[in-house]
Length: 274
Image 1 (cartoon, rainbow, N blue to C red):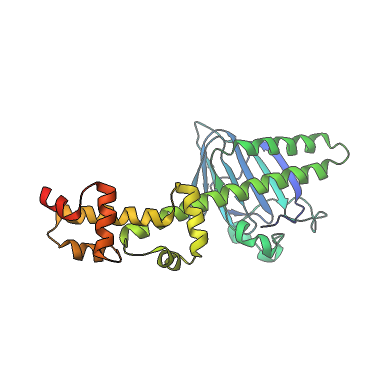
Image 2 (image 1 turned 90 degrees about the vertical axis):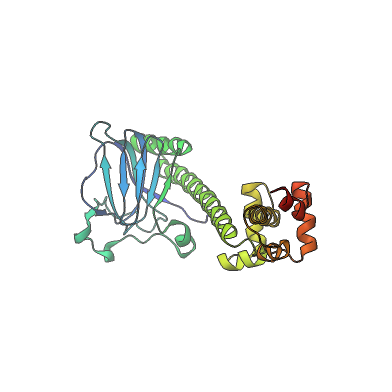
């Protein structure tokens, strides 16, 4: 992905103020970073816990509700921004109550290139690296020295790239869990079949899996098949040939070879031991 955009900071504050107990919609894009306190950030689909170090990105047109714990009030950075400089002359805009929101007034600054990554809420826990950029954006807003808006834009771009990377990393970890769950249900599937089921290219899937798990997808599939075969050998009376077929091995001889290499005993011998 290329990051050919120049974000514009419309407003930043270090505050404890927010409109509570109502679903609101912002007309521009926002960041919320928790400095201290505890609470929650809710959308219609999910609730995110807010603790120190939590960073929330939310785009224009997304209904949300922020709540603070009474015994631990939130103190946070809030940033209003656009992904480009097309709307710099517009004034500061207060979020609207959901029922009063006019979609035609949204500042649609997210380009088609960025839509896939920034069209929904992103929550990053332990986003301590984000605080450095936010602190600098805030100090520039206070001092308003020559070129402060350009520096704010640069720091905001660093923050957006950081969010993109962290979100992609989380998506990849989620994908690996999805792969594992699929293989656990269907150990007979091979690399290509797993990729087809999840709508990914086999090469990409293997690259993501190996980077995250430290093992190739093929090797993980074989290990999963052997684990399932071991379970069937020790808990059922199915013949090794049938187990070999159920677990996706190309032949009984291949199954026996892999099994002996993994467990230092043949399938038939382990059946005798039980």
